[in-house]
Image (cartoon, rainbow, N blue to C red):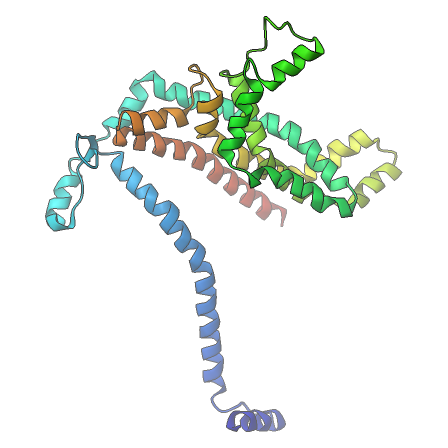
Length: 330
């Protein structure tokens, strides 16, 4: 009641409310703490789930392999004190990174992974863009159903969906049986798709197609169709309006979709392991072999660190380029 009476007197007399500065200061302080908490939660999430595991893997990459649990040395222990742990740091070595350069298996795995991921991303874009464009131009009442159909495969296990392609692409699979029934191929010479790079491309495109379609759909749905109508009124052919208006405005969705497909495809393990053959060389399979079969944790950690750098550096460069481009347009 006293606060309300003071506020009424302040409104009638025009004089500042007693203690008003203190209230305003406390209000600003509370707003600042709320803003800090709102921003701090995502950063805390990144610290616990990204930065901390990366630091651990980065530390193991400078260790030596050992027949022990864990299978590397040195292992830090609080009981050794600061001096003991500092002495262990001096035992770190960069031999694991040197081994990645000296052995052709590893850099060929990196190159093959980037090539397969790049081709898969292009194929996914070629399939996903028309699909997203058709969804964006569909009647509004149909769009939620179309989006649901795109994300419907996520309702089942990723592993089961990849296993299903084994039954489709094998020599006795559904695809060969269907083509034999049509008389397209000879039953004695069925198509050999499984255990090849072609099967890996099919598996990656199928598995990551929603990651390309959804960002494209979100961008194309917000497209101002009056621009296309104006271009048509000025005599611009539909195909020319598509390439000069629709495609440039869809670039943010294209970039987002390509990153969402390319980044996980580079380190993919399940698809090349199940659908690829012995000649399918990808860094995910190499990492699995070193970590679980050879139990060489330091070398596999070095592989993971280099793989992360391959992915992070282009992303950071692109973000800086986009930030400079936006500043120049202001």
